[in-house]
Amino acid sequence: MKNWQYAFIVFLGGCCYGALSTFVKLAYRVGFTPTQVTGGQYFFGTVLIWLLVLFTKKKRLSWLQVVKILASGIPFGFTGLLYYQSLQTLHASLAIIFLFQFVWVGAIFEWAFNKKKPSRRKLVSIGVLLIGSVLAANIVLGQTGEFSWQGMILGLLSAVTYTSFIFLSGSVEKDAPPVLKSALLSTGGLLVISILFPPTFLLDASVMSALFPYGLVLGFFGVALPPLLFSIGLPHVGPALGTILSASELPMAVTMSFFVLAENVTPLQWLGVLFIIVAIIGGNGKRDKKEEPVDCDPRDNPSLQAAYKKGEIYRRFL
Image (cartoon, rainbow, N blue to C red; front, side, top):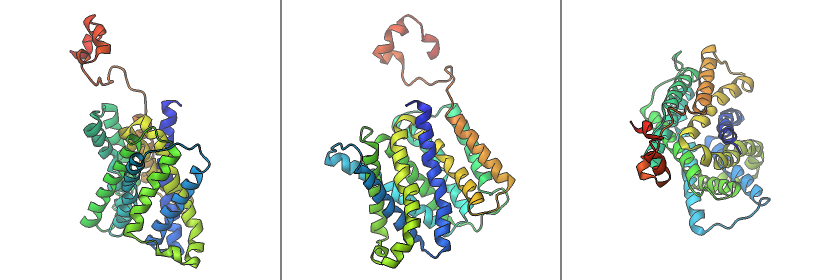
């Protein structure tokens, strides 16, 4: 596959998360609690992805590999928990802004752990994306509800855990089959949810039958599909660009709320959506060769020593 195809796969993973808020609101309208919705989402999603594993080519993983992938799914579960908790004390448009801080946290992660300094193009894309996020979340018009330090901290923590999940999805056990890796990541998230919120609703047949359609949709778009898409695309695009691409979540959420929930979306919010799309395209564009960073001095790289001696690339290190 080509690089743009891997980028599009990560973009779709972000769109899946963006669709969740609409279905969560529909579930709340019929009376389900946040615990039931969250538990049902992770339970049905994990079951779905493990069913898919049964129909894929098997590859044995060592116990150490399994444990590493399961542990990588822990931030996946915490992201949902922290974000839903922040929504209890913050207006949704403000909570999503704190979650969206993952767009620059991802660049810091890649700089700190992979020693890859963000390019000027990527920094500009992040700046445009954050401006678009503020516009799309309707903060400019002051419709953010009451401010809560507790909600702010929880929202920022959800941004860190979401970035951690993206980072680990793209770096841990890259050679593991994507479907199996996705199933293990989802299982790690389910374990966190089950420990903190025991799924007692599973014992109530009437609740389970009513929750089934909502849990199935939320599980597919929120648990089964995104880890699979990220497992395929992130190893090829990297966590910094991956966080920019997964920012497709916000314009998707705005679009779904407009067409499905018939919520009012202002022209300023649509402008914000446009900003985000431009930032995503810009962050995924081809680099200018003159601006492309060099990771090391050629004198430390045997494959470049001959060219260095001939002076062919000396000008790049003036």
